[in-house]
Length: 200
Ligand code: MN3
Image 1 (cartoon, helix red, strand yellow):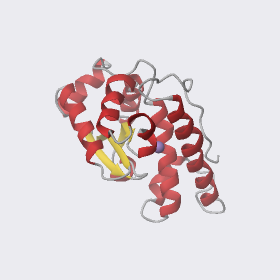
Image 2 (cartoon, rainbow, N blue to C red):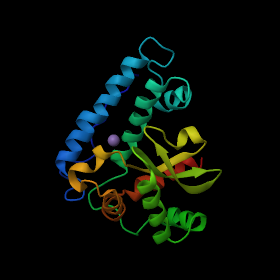
Image 3 (cartoon, rainbow, N blue to C red):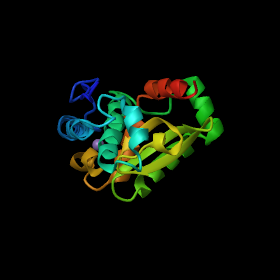
Image 4 (cartoon, protein in one colour):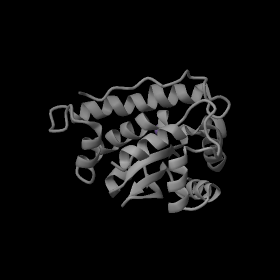
């Protein structure tokens, strides 16, 4: 099946005041839609037409930059919408996930600090992540549309640090955006779900 734009799993104003309706309208309806449209156009007539997005991402990395950029961003955004929810964030994590994260990285405060640091130090556009690599949860960062899938890891949480994700609400204050993401937006249940899938 060709790439299709998923609906947001909540109304456009559900994440206010931490992420505005205006940001979600532009980010979901314009930016994500453009990755879907361009990705489908670039895949047309190639071996990647109608292939699962994960296969396109890993198969085109380092080989077909144009298609990779759009497929990577499609994959990243499909999950990004689901990694947030109204009333999310905070330090109350599903027990098993918290146990694994704290044993692999350290206390929740350190995990948050490392995640924010990864996002702030990603020069230019990109993403910061929690991912499972070799059975352990690690903090990562990637440029542009890259994600942990092409680095032998499985993403369980990602935050978009392209300016289109925060400039309307936070202007240049990327660290404040990352803090609000962790404190008020993260859907830890979906992170736990991706963790379970990654460990299978
Ligand atoms: Mn984006």
